[in-house]
Amino acid sequence: MILFDQGTPVPLRRHLHPHSVDTAAEQGWSELSNGDLIAAAEKQGYELLITTDQNLRYQQNLSERRIAILVLMTTSWPRIKSGVESVVIAVGTSSQSNYIEIQFYFEGRRRPAQ
Image 1 (cartoon, rainbow, N blue to C red):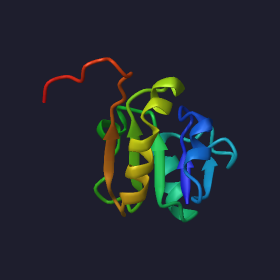
Image 2: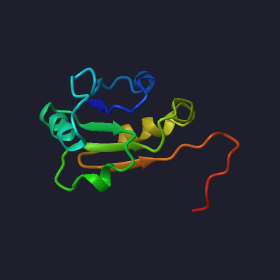
Image 3: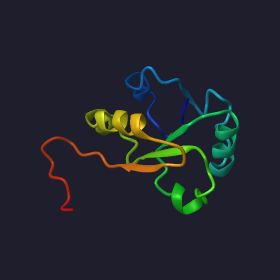
Image 4: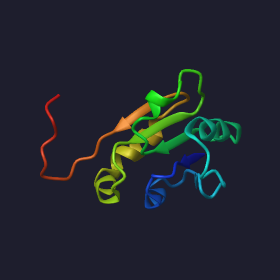
């Protein structure tokens, strides 16, 4: 089961079939802070939290969490849509306690040097 945090574009959901995807708002968790949201998600059996909160790893101690966290480094649906394959791969390969960040680039734009 996957949970979308507040900033995660909902249209991404249709690309993650056959996974079960809920949003924090659908669960009535819109007002929960990050730590409380993660705890509630784990308690409900969610395996993966997808968020756009780039500060999450600095604000929370994630070392004792069971839920995997996937951070989308933009809230822009057009950018995410152009790189949706990366999200699908990350979702398919995530495992307990993983922390993954995904950058998105528009086609024709050069990626920064590694």
